[in-house]
Length: 510
Picture (cartoon, rainbow, N blue to C red):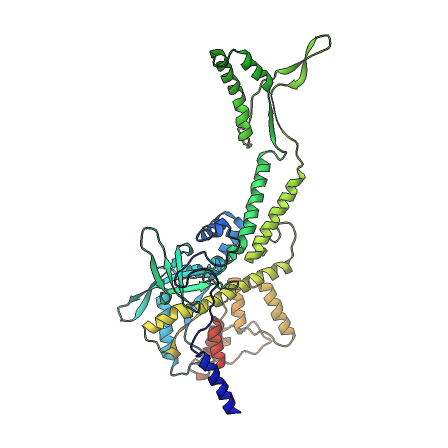
């Protein structure tokens, strides 16, 4: 049986070596060695979404559409405010830990001493969720002690990426950047930090949230334009003007033959009288200076006995055709619906709760919690990206052993309700698990309140006002057991930081 199994394996390998890539993630767009930007997976072919034009359109949406700008800033600012650390690998023994910690401290100093701030770097990287991809170029520097540090990490705008170079399997090998006034520059994969949202496509450019927002944002802008036109025209309808056109035309014809001076003068007079009306029809927006002075001459009516009398109809009038104003309520509802759709796509629907007088606290908590899960998921993605594209090459340049390579860490961003947290702790106490004054949870609750933390050790507290409880024995500062307890608490606090999914899997395997 074992021999048959080996024969089957050998037969499979004879057709294709296990180290050989047979398939590809390519689609029908592009050329193998130089695929152009904007050539991937865009079946609609809308004019403003083809090529680099779509990135200009995305920038415009973030600037001009308020809900998109608010949601984008909220998401990226939360990413930029996260607290990052560089940690030694998990699962090291006592002999390996000091050297690994030294490498981690060195990497931390290099990352937070660049020309560009680390918060700006993380915001630019996280924007790949919006644009579809992000490319940043790192530059190394040699430090006085002989080690290699990080000079800077600079963003390369999406609209400047002219071509992608991929191998036969579809893996990105390099990108070509086109900048005005200089030659195209090829950036190898080993020189860039590359993030892509390829959930819905195999394109190296990905598909970001801005692509999903574009159609709804266009409709929203159209509805807002129509609403503005309605308000500026007094919400009533189409403007109209009346004048004695036939009478003025007859006066021109009666002035004399064509080309005569009298007829030219009468034609000029007719044009001057009609000019204010034509201008008002073309530019009838209401403002504090809107107004029009017209003659009050009425039409003269002639009776059966040829007697004449003034009529009630003036020769010159300005008015608006009456319109049904109910359509403006429907327009407002359509605008609100588009705003809700855009906010839902961005995951910031909680920003609009209460705007219409509806909503509840439970609904707000649910939507806020979902948004913060998205932020946490993005932070986990960034951890893996920085471990792969930043700390990996930094370790190679500094000769760090594989097993001692530092890893990125970041604190979890969440919206914690202190009242809800205290309610949960009270229920734990009623179930027989009370929180003691020296519990680490007490310090974290003080942090949420913005207050100074109480002493972490029981022997540092003044319990003289609690006669119902015996004072704990005074701990000896030189006691090795007490020092061990303190070290364990610090270790637990460090583990609360998020680590990449890959590193967490490695630690569990160990």
